[in-house]
Each structure stands twice: as C-alpha cells, then as structure tokens.
Image (cartoon, rainbow over all chains, first blue to last red; front, top):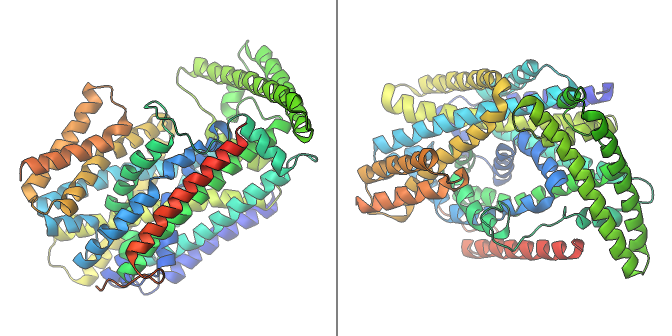
Length: 552
Length: 39
C-alpha cells in the first residue's frame, strides 16, 4: 500500500463514520431508532438491502469464482427475482399492515407467543454465529495479503460498526449502506476497467473474452440437470427461489431494511430494484474475475496465491521440480494463447481449431501443476486447502495503480462493515422487541427501550468482535459450520412463515410443533443420513408445513 | 397503511410481470452469451 492508497482508505472509512453519525441524528425514539420512523425512500432501502447481502467475503470469493470456475455461479441468483416478486406481493403488505418491528412479532399476531419466542431464538443463534465469521474472514485475507495483524483489523472494523450503529440506529446503518454501495459500485467498475486496461498491448477485449470463453470461463447458463452440479439453470431457479425466500422473507437482518419504508409501495420497489439489479451486478463481478484470469495468462501468477502456504511448501523436496513444471506450463499456455489470438484473426478455421485444442491442452497442464501444489499443502497440513480467496487481492495489491488499491481495500472494509452493521442492528432489535420487551420487562417507557436497544447494539457489536477473534484460528471448519447452521434453521423459519401466509386454518400449537418437527427432521438428516446440507432448507420447510397441516 | 399503485405500469401485477419477463430475457441473453463465447 502506497501513501495515496492509505489516504483513499482512511478517507473512505472516516467519511462513512462521519456520514453515519450525521444521518443518525434525531433517532431518539424506539420507532426512529429501530425503524427510522418508517420514513425511508425506496432507493435507500434498495441499496441497504443490497449492501447487507454483500459481505466482504462474498465480494472476495465471487471474483475468485470468476477466475477459477468461470461465471456459471451467476445462475445461483436466478431465483432471486422470483422470490422478490412473491415477497413483494405477500410478505411486504402483511408486515406493513401488522405494524410490526420484527418478522417474528408478526408470528405472535398470527399464531402465539411461544412460536414467536422459538423463531426469535433460532434467529439469534443463527445470525449471531454467522456474524462473527463474516467479520473474521476478510480480516484473515487482509492479514495474509497485506501483512496486517488480524486482531487489529477485526477490532477496527468492529469499532467502526459499533460507533455509528449504537448512536444512530437504523437510519445511520441504512444511509451509510447507501454510501457504501456507491463505493462498492465505483470500486467494482475500477477493478473491471483496470483488469482490462492491464492486458498486454495487442490483446483486445474481444481477444480476452475469447481466451476466457475457450476454457469454459464464460459459461453463464447450463441447461443440463445434475444433482451433483451445484450451479445450473434449474438449481438456480428452484433452489435459489427457496433460499432467497427464506433469506429476504424471514431473516430480520433483511426484513428490517424494508420495514423502514414510508409506504408499502416504497418497500416493494426496494425489493424489486434488487430483483432487477442484483444479477447484472453479480455478472460483472464474475466477469472481472474472468478478466483477471486472462491477465494471468500473460503475467505469471504464483504457484499458490496464499503466500503463507506457498512458503510452507517451498521446503518440500518435491517443490523444486513442481515449480519448474509449473513455469513450463505457464510459458506453454502463454504461447498457445498467443497462437489462438493470431488464428482468431485469420480466416483459416482449421488453424483456429488446432490453436483452440493446443490452448485447452496447455490450460489442463497448467491446472494440473497448480493442483499438485495444492496437494503439497494438504500433505503438509493434513487438511483440505484452497487459495481462491487470495486471488483477487493478490492481483489488486501487486498490479493495480496507487489509489485504486486503496479503493479496493476500502470496498472490502465497507462490505464487511455494512453487512455487520445491519446484522448487529437486527440482532439488537430482536433481542429488545421479541425477548426483553415481550418476556422480561413489558411496561417500560419509550426512553427505556431506546436505551435498551442502544445497549443491545453495543453488546452484539462486542460479541461479534469477540466471536471473530475466537474464530480466527478455526476458520476453515467454522465457515462450513456456519453455512450448515444457516441451513439447519432457515428451513424451519421459512416453513412457519409459509404456514402463516398460505394456510389460514393452521393455529399456534400446530405451527410451533411444526417448527420443532422440521428442526428434528433436519438434525436427523444431518446426523443419520448422507443428505447434503444444501437440501436442509427444502426438507425443513416441507416437514414444518406438513406437520402444521396434519395437526390443524 | 394504504396500498398505493406503482409509479409506473399502472398496477403491481404488471410490474411483477415485467420483472419476470426481464428475468426470462436475462436468461435468454446469458444463453446467447454462452453460445457465442463457448466455441
């Protein structure tokens, strides 16, 4: 990082905190603190929803996905517009008319207090765990790539979040997320333009696209259906719809964004904006990753992007010959790519076909050498290893011009803080509204609950920092564990809301029992079968609905 | 709280239909993109 990068990074962070504190003024009632007095315009909610979903690790991983696996991951988001239309038509007007602070408060109006308490507790467990890892993961990547102490990074990010979330409540969170999304958009555009601009002279955008496409990096749609293939059109449309219904319809960290709308129409528009804008945004992030792939055809990347693990395997006796093979594979691929670009410009289709075959073969050799490097790490550490999360930041810090590096690091920072701030805010809301006010102190003043909300925000902010510290040395298994924890609980949460909206005859005890049965089914599937955790959402939801109906 | 009409297209049903048509066009566009750049 050069001086200009530090200026850009520090300026961005300070401006966010200052803007959050400025925008959060006047949040001196519970309604203003937790729901912004229901005054938010659609565009602020829309960008806030987008920023809450875009965590730092999502941003780092998605570019890496484009580099390593191509853009097929975009299919994962194809269910999102369908989910948003369903939610805009059903959940948004229902929540607004019920005049609730939380999604779970609605469950008491529809069912009973025990169902509300159960689902609130499920949310606090699931979201509390996920938040710590969301803050910890980017800190680890920044530490490895830039050498920053990870503890310092976590504490700085946590302190930023607590500063404006505790003081300004949801108004501060939402308006800073608007600012953060603008920074993210600018950073993304800068990354894509710079990645293309850094291509060697003589390699145009058309050449770059054809080089990426020739080895399968630009396969956006896969029509084949395969249970083992996670990303195809059908899993995106059907599995994605389920997942996004659960996330945007039952997770308070998202529901609270659109509950702040000044009208039903404004809240609907905020969701529909995401339905329209999210997929092109993900597409551009993935294409940026694909362009980084093309850049590294001409500029030799390290055998492994994780410098710590690369140093570890350099001591292995097998490393020297592997490194020589890797360098040879890189040179061969660069030569084959040059030939393919030349043949593309000629009218000779036979020459082009030969060039294509040679280039694909060279890519296979290159991939094989890298895989052997990964296996050396796995042999040394005894655990599975991937370095994909380090690809994009390695590219940024080594090759991007001064100023842009600071901007991209700022994007990672703001992506981490925006999602964490929104989640801390929602955890505080559920703690105060669904637990404290409902079960512990029912008749406090508005000022009392306002202070309770501030204290709860500070508590959850500190909790996230402490949990992130704990997760630091256990991240590999924790990321998977947190993904699983989400899948353990989203199915049950989605199921109880399906019962609430689609089956008027179902009553409280049936819904409560349904959630317990759904959760039992998920835990049984986890401990007694080999069903992948990706199916837990659908399984839990179906069991909740069937049990609720059977008992009604 | 009143359920206001959307600022464009006249009714929410039409807005939802427009979003779903947009999704269909996006998928078709991605399919064409895949066919063009996957030799």
